Image (cartoon, rainbow, N blue to C red):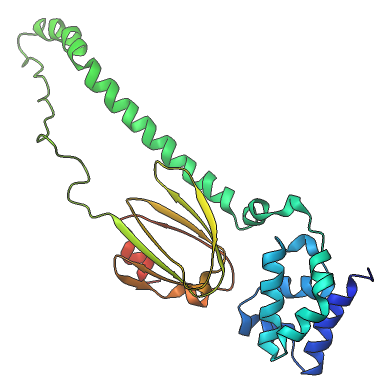
Length: 251
C-alpha cells in the first residue's frame, strides 16, 4: 500500500481547489477544528474509530460541496487500511470529554449524603438508649424541667419522599450519528451509537447523558425543548433532576 498521506493530501487538495479554510468547514459541518486537522495530517490517534473517520470525511466533503461518493471510491483501500490506536477507543476518547472528572465531582455529594443518612439512622436507633442515660441526670436537678423526649417521626402508610415530585422524562430524536452514554441513579451505565431517525425515551429522578454530537439530536425534557445543544460543536455532559429542568431548558 502506498503512503497513507495520500488520504489527507486528497482532502486538503479538494478543500484548496474550492478556496475553503478548515475554520469554515468546522463551522458548517459542526466538526471540531482539531479533528479536521487530524484528517488532513493523518493523525489517526485523535480519531476514535473507523465509523467516526468516515463521518468526519463525509462532513468535510459535504461542507465544501465535493463528490463524496467519488472520493470514497478513490480512497476506499486507504480508509479500510487505517490502523487506529485501540488505546484511544471510545472509552479513552470520552475520558477526554471529562467523563471521569464528572464522576469525581459527583462523588463528594454522594459521600455527604451517605454520612447524613448514616447519622440519621444512628440517632433513630440510639434515641431510646440516650433517653436512659440522660433521664437520671435530669432527675438530679428538680429545680429544672426534666428533659422531654423528642416526638417520634411518623409517615403515612405507603408514602415516600418523592410522592409529590414528578420524574424527569427525556425524549431524544437523532438527526445525525451520535455516541450516547446514559447513567441513571441506581443503575449501570449504558452506551450506544445512535443513527439518524432513531429515538430514545428515558424516565427517572436523576439522569446523566454524555452526548458525543449534541448538534445531531433534538431533545425534549418533560415535553419542553432543549435548544442550546444545537449550537454546540463539542461533546456535552448533561445531568437532569426534577429540580433543575427549568435551568436546563432556559440555557
